[in-house]
Length: 322
Image 1 (cartoon, one colour):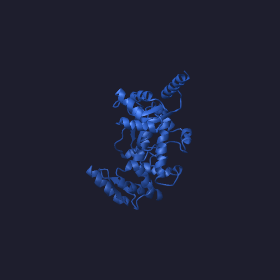
Image 2 (spheres, rainbow, N blue to C red; image 1 turned 90 degrees about the vertical axis):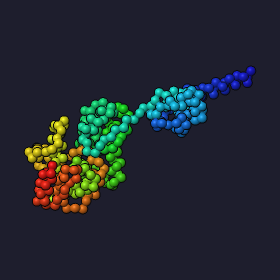
Image 3 (tube, one colour; image 1 turned 135 degrees about the vertical axis):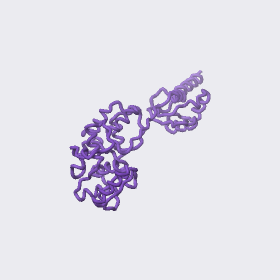
Image 4 (cartoon, one colour; image 1 turned 30 degrees about the vertical axis):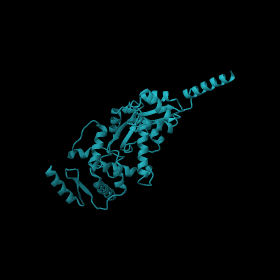
């Protein structure tokens, strides 16, 4: 009698352990696309979601669900029985949304892309946070705006991740990339980022970036206006963000703004876009040339000149070809 009761208790205890009614915590796992049942079992076992991968595979096969396990990210309880885990994996996990932020975009354009991807719900909030000194200070920067600091890259976020979290990740990404190319702290690279943003907007090809960077640096050294058309376009779009500008007229170069580098000496007040890492590298390692001017050839490349006379001749020549 006693042996029978003991056996019954043992069986009940084993069954309860198998059901695992106790909460031992959760863990996030990722099931990649096109994973086999065996690969899924290995992931689950490695992360302590299941105890025995062979038991999991046995039940998956018995239930005929080997090809129905769905990819994605899951928050699963630790050491649960296979039935619980299989049920969750058949529902499907959260899928990350990939989004590419190209080089040369401004805050408003980044907000629009994220909104269309359903990664943020409020474009205004995103833009506001990017210009909120308190928020910017909390993420480790002493700036008035994050224009220029939203690192271009391809990111993966959950749907509706939230404005603050996305901004933080983009800034952290920039910090990481900068650490790989310079020992100078990010707070000491403000002028570098500004010049790099000009290079980003002016250059189409990587081989020209160091040359264009040197042109701007040469002009700064000689106390000459930078005369970057890109700064005039940015200045105009600050007040008219929805306006499409394809070319500048002579009168546009007189547009009154501290960002207009035709009117004002030195650097503009801040970056005019988020530069890519190649543009930043170009400013940190500019070409060894003494050019002071460049004009578009119309094919994405530029003609560089040392004197104003040469520049005028090149400008006339390439304008005539357009």
